[in-house]
Amino acid sequence: MGSWPFVGGFIGFMIVWAVINTWALASNAWDPYPYILLNLFLSMLAGLQGAILLIAAKRQDAIAAVMAQHDYDTNLKSKEEIEMLMDINRQQLEILRELQAFAAPSNVRIDEAGVGD
Image (spheres, rainbow, N blue to C red):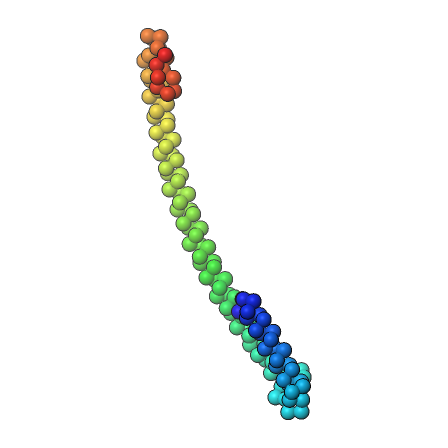
């Protein structure tokens, strides 16, 4: 119901309906001019489309909820990994400071790359 072929076909069907009931069967039309039967069909179609749209919206919401949960889980895992890397970085900086403190009395300076002067 949400495609251009459907829209074109439906408009064509309504035009054919109107032409047949207005000119081809002018005196014996099964649905004369205000097209009450056609209006009934259109009303039923609108009701059906409303239900289909609600079903599609619920499905899309369910998909969005699953995607959001996946993103949340990924963010939590990333946060844990970043915190682990930050702890490793802190430990490395602490080791580097200890090495610098150890090397300081002998006038040897160790830069951040770990190479002595």
